[in-house]
Length: 92
Ligand SMILES: [Zn+2]
Image 1 (cartoon, rainbow, N blue to C red):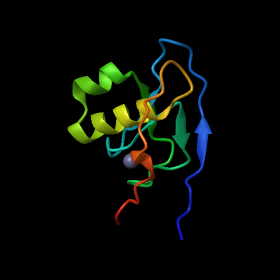
Image 2 (cartoon, protein in one colour; image 1 turned 45 degrees about the vertical axis):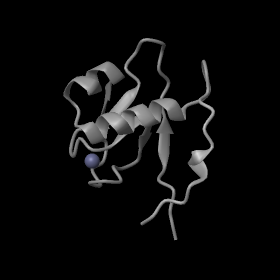
Image 3 (cartoon, rainbow, N blue to C red; image 1 turned 90 degrees about the vertical axis):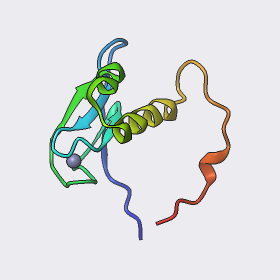
């Protein structure tokens, strides 16, 4: 059984930092939403806002790639990437 984590949506103005990083494990990042608790380390309310540029500055490669993925995940604005590989089953 897989439980979808609960997220809070976060309103961000254009130009505001809209990536939220877990300051506890620095291993989870979400865009314009915050999970109730970190799925990686279970810390609660440990997320802080950063820009993608800022994360690229100090983040680990894994964190940066997660941030970039979260960025391209949001297809609400500008161009949506045409990529049908999202349906791939993820191995556990
Ligand atoms: Zn964490």
